[in-house]
Image: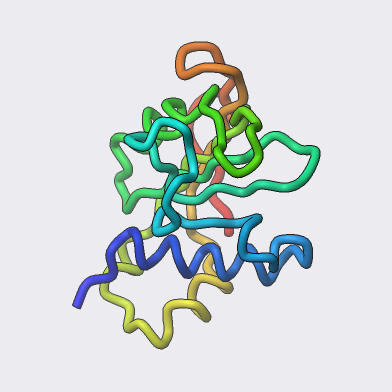
Amino acid sequence: MANSEISINDKIVDVFRAINTDWRLYDQVSSENSHGLLKKKALRPDILIIEPGVPPICVETEYEPGASIEADAAGRLGEIAVKSGGMIQAAFAIKIPTRFKALSSPKLLAELRKAQDFEYCVLSGSSPTNYVRWPASGYVRES
């Protein structure tokens, strides 16, 4: 059975929580399975990171080739997170390698932790049309 992006996102949230001790609290890192993340319900982010005193960070994921991933991430900029009232000013657009689709569920978390073939870019700004992209073109390839 193929892994959906939603199931992958749940596991990515688990990886994030293991990396940052502050994020181990369930309300600081949420996947799209959590309802009520943004005021505009139709713009539910894949993953939302909320820390006290810091603007929320959105993470959008999509299996390679990720044709709409950057537009999805840009579309979250300027949106308001319900839990914090903060405006999203940074969004990561992450391409998930297709090999994760067919990976067995018990192996998924361990493989995500050691993966080195994710590609991503970061968008920073106050609206879907007014942002800076890093890198300026292409994607960074790392874990």
